[in-house]
Length: 212
Image (cartoon, rainbow, N blue to C red; front, side, top):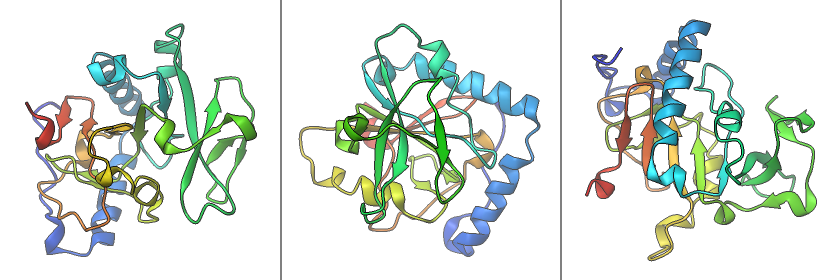
């Protein structure tokens, strides 16, 4: 699939929700075998990146709806003194995400969206500022690493502090996606938080300001 062309739709030309539906349909159409192959290839690319190698606190996500699965990182990077986290919803967090420490054998519970979350809380909870690297799911992306998500805005609200930081650039934001989720161009809205990079089964797409 290395010669795959980006989705021909440009966001300005049709409703965003229709674009979301099309891209979600495309990733769900991948067979289980394709899903596993794409995840393995993307994780291998990610593990070779300097951004991943330098990160100690890493936020993952629990995949669903055809999203690229990052969970094999737990085994592939075992023994490397990393701490893994999953996003959790909190009743009084006003639509923002926190991150709970996660190990592969931890108990999980479903949140209001049916997404598994770690049951451990308290001292195991961290804000996004404490992460070195956040791996993010997405519905679509373009060559400059603009992202569209499911539309609830949790990541954008949670990471709204990043544009105001001048020196400390953590956490780094890397999206994980299938190449079939790439579109030609997205027009970011004022509240959208761009990614530093997107990893797919074929390559590492790097945001233009980081292409040095």
